[in-house]
Image 1 (cartoon, one colour):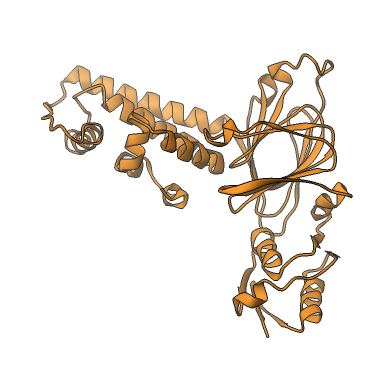
Image 2 (cartoon, rainbow, N blue to C red; image 1 turned 90 degrees about the vertical axis):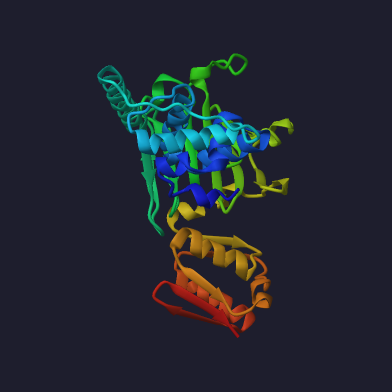
Length: 342
């Protein structure tokens, strides 16, 4: 299944999708892994997915519908998904006055639940090339890089402090635990990316979650890495100490290394573009993901060209000059389109 396929789905689209119906009614392990990852990647879709799931579950339990024509089609599709080898004739009849009232009340209740679920979340995001500082309700601070987003509950201080991140963010977590040997649920702080959970007490760390890969660099304190999906959850949790840098991605072996100067991970906070021994392709991905450029590289061989050493510039034009001077290639810019060629 393709994650991108479901991003623009309406409730009706989900109701007519066989893979989604199977997930709601009789999910396989693969279904659970896929939809857990999808919701973590797209937290704004959680409300509509939950609503569609409730509708499917409700219609599985009844044989009368407020709209006879459309809902019969939905129910028949749900039934055939579960009983592919059986043919079951449905008895559908027109609603009476009492059933119509009940159906109307159900829709009103569902709309209220959807509004509550959406309104109970806070969504903060940034545009390409913008850096934004966010003060969370517990006085923790998140600095978001360009083209990034976090979601958290409005009642953030009343339960486990949880944040869902897409993109890149620098977290400075407020320490509220006084006894490290006895950590209460209300004292935890958890950051969810698409494929990692990061559990914190009080610390500073950088998280980058782009293109199905997550990297975590610890500046100070201590954090524990766990995995939300069923396959990776069998892997032993990893505890990071200051200077540790972990990289993880789908179908890619997790890599843990030490950084001599982890503070350099945060140079982007001051609008610096920083790289260490990058390839042209790696630089291009940052330009696209964080600054919104469209980068065209003339051929694959140029993509693998590497610039040895460290780069730290605050102006994208300085970066273009370094690329051009190092490998004697041309970097052409037209608005937000960059072309790199011989």
